[in-house]
Image (tube, rainbow, N blue to C red; front, side, top):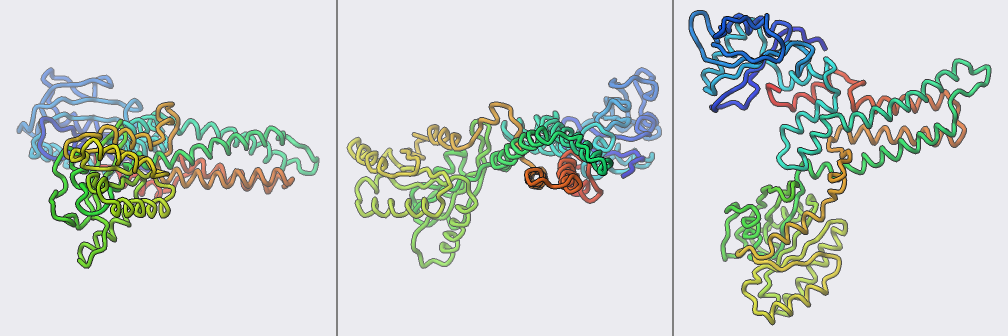
Length: 470
């Protein structure tokens, strides 16, 4: 892929703001900007040092468009590895468009989505996994996803993969060399050392593959389904957690006919709460569809909160038995999902009723139990702490590499499979030429992650998800 023209785009979000930044990159970036820039000190941009900022005006002939600050970055010491100019202008939409249109007339081309970062990759300023981390960093909306993206952008993941690839490549070279001396029956690659290396690579790959289970939910937000019978306070709980009136609250049972979703950050982790329709037998067709969606959301959730009305359960033995049956159903159907059984409206209980309820809840096995009042806020902080405990954040605290990208996960699985094939071949005494085939396949999948192996279609798919101007 050859990109020799000069591109331009708005690097800040579109719309009106205090300032906007317009970015140019390419061999003609400085000269094109210089032709329309009148410095207050009379300097020319082409004669200035890299990483300098200059005050002046953008001129369209004799017409002044705006007073601006122009930052100059000369190749190769720039984000893209090319000459880059960034113009900080006032945030008027009209001014932004006037400056961009001016540069288009002067010979620039509008940048496509992610083209600045694509050029950075093509010019060797970052590898492919680091380039993908740029998009993750832009979209990060909590501390955990930000930490993971920063570590990947700094090359933590890349360096781990590259080290494994290099060691495997060295042994591959020795085995390939053996093939050149096949008639002399020599062995350059120590098989015991090679087995140790393969065991170590398998261990690291397995750790990275397993980390995706945590990394993916952190990146996407951990879905939590709030379920229970109608009118137990599910919508009130959602509103209390979000600290806003997101869901309609009513004393009429069955008010929530559809699922309502919103996200908050707890302890740096994003949780996506789903307020579902109340589960009960109903003849109402619309409510019935809502209940069907409830079970679909439970299927997709990582955590289930089963909410029930404390004051009803403390007085009604039949209701208590029904509660136990419903909880048992959920535990049997979703044995792998953390289940949090929450008694709501405890502000309506006497002390004796509260004690009886605690005894009832203590008999519920295989779940976490909690007493709250969504209306008054009692128990909500403890609820958040329990939810946070469900997330394995040990890897985050230790700054371990965590995989969040589905493409990387797929390549790691394929590399792991090929490495296991090599191990099996080594144990069964497979010939060097057949071992070399599987080794080359493993190296190929390693290269897919960092970008040693790419094609136009792959790059197009990755950078199409970027925003314009990045």
